[in-house]
Image (cartoon, rainbow, N blue to C red; front, side, top):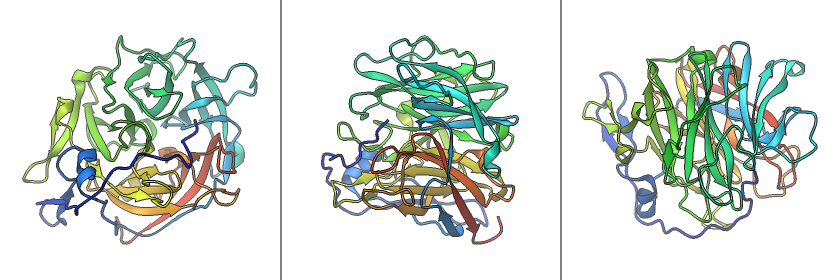
Length: 405
């Protein structure tokens, strides 16, 4: 999937000044800064709200380029861990298969053994592949030039869940529908419902919160899923996603039933999160109107399809996002925030090189976080701007908290 390098995006005027609503927090803790009220994109159309800068980490260092490429073909690679394996889904590629003849699959699921600390141990195996033409496994719900793309994965209760969206194959610029597929046999077979769970380009880029191997670091009895509206990244045809939204599902309930989903609807006067089963009531947990490289266009929105992982040793939630030319990393003490940006890595305008390049689809698999939580591996992809890493590609991220967690 080409993310649209150097693509002009229609202008959106940003005027005025933004403000964050401050609400009381628990005793002894600093005030909680809630995201601004209202629809994220409407907020950004009238005021240039930016995410606060984090002081949680003393330092954060990310490699300038991918340093590990697992033999594979494809992009995105949302993942979850179960047992000794990492399960991952890809788009636009042959996955871990050695045979790359014939028509390229649009989507697939595989499993990886090994860890980045022993590169020779890393190897993957394909489980299933599908194409929009066949729709033998994952259905396309929207008529027209749409095909299946994976956005989030969850290993929970002995099952694997996969969020799949309809992406416009002609422009990569709108995602009108999405659903959740489930596998009861470690990714060999999959089941979907009779209709999409999300439509109207609302919450159609779904990313599950990664709580570690088999959700072993879960902090309560809920599964959490983040979502974006409009598109999976900055767009030239629809509004850019500029808000990160959140839903929760009781772990004992059916994740494939929309009736089980509750959407974050803001905080009450005591800073406690409130929830609603009405998606119309949802409120962003993060609004960031920042745009990078405005010299090339209106600039690139910083909220995109990436991943959210719980760094259990540091008791911190990490959201990895990206723009056309940058990586954007955020942290929070709770799934609903407050979210603050702790690292922007700018790779500059193309051409890129083997020693300096960005990418898209940024995720940090929980299986690839060290025991002390300070070293982790970030997955991203690119196959333009002078470099080709259209595979399962990793680079090291090292963080040092400002104080003991």
